[in-house]
Length: 114
Image (cartoon, rainbow, N blue to C red):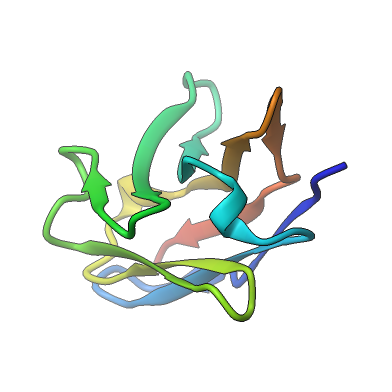
């Protein structure tokens, strides 16, 4: 059984930064990739970023150049550094991966507001 636990969300002003964490209960090298998604109120889930088992990152167009995905293999944790935050980044952010089936965390709320 794989468990994913997100943390690091909160309230931040526009232009600010936050770093989210996704801690896995097993080695993240078991996964082909770990992804971050977000879902704003009343909207469909949006893919944000992904990091592969080989460490290659990829980003959605709306966050490219502002967000950075990274990992710490020893900690079994994937991070999402979010800079230059905008009000439209407000959402519940959750991490997701697959190992025979899809696993998703409960999410962490990010609110960007002055």
